[in-house]
Amino acid sequence: MALFDWLKRGKPKPAPVRAPAMIVLLDALPEIDPAQAARGLAAIEPLRVAPRIELERGDGMLKGLAEFDAHCIGIAGTRAPVPPEVMKTTVEVSSWTGEGRELLESHAARLVLTHHGGGAPILEKYIALYKLAAVLGGEHLRGVLIEDAWTCAPPALVREFTSAEMLKAFRESTPPILFTGFVKFHTDDGTWFATKGQHMFNAPDLVMFGPEEQPSEVMELFMNIFLYVTGSKARIAAGHTLQIAEEAYLKFSELAPDNPWREWLQGAEETLELKRINKEEINRK
Image (cartoon, rainbow, N blue to C red):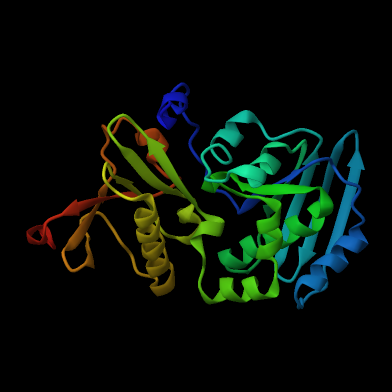
């Protein structure tokens, strides 16, 4: 079954522009010791401001707040799995298979972490969410979802993300695969490739139709464009062109209003479509 076959059964809700947030998947709603959780945060890497975690629990619910460095993160937990519509646009469209996917699908409870502000860059806000997810989830962790980015990660990867070596690498070069999504929509005519969540980094989301495109090559192309835009603060817009190889040229354009899959391909903010062009079309208005 083509991915769009089940997506088109209901129109998607517009993705709101919101503060960075993360859903933490759990096998059960745990008993969390705030003091122990604070020590766990401090153990990941040195903090400028000592962590403070406050939690209240009752009637199968959990709510609270975590503050450390420039971060203020709201915590809301419940003894219920993630709604099916959220699973469809995260776990079900992901490339995870085997044990990783089974852990994501087998969760029975969840925490929602919402970054409420502070002066930290967006990258640091996402890193803070990953660190808090690993600490609060503990042995109950079954993975995380970033709903706006249509992406997810199983528990082993979440814990790996919080290692000193990985955190250092993140800060040297933002890895888009961790905080944004890369989705493949299969149709009878070919495959649409799309990013999700890049607006959080002030970059447009990208889409490309590729009957003959290799997914790994499209993903690498999208990642390189994202890194270029976020690293150089450059702006790309409809009409701009790009040369990616000696005889390979691309052009950015607006997503066509009559595209039958527009509602699913369109990101939360600006979305640009990439198309292959001839050398003669470079810089042509």
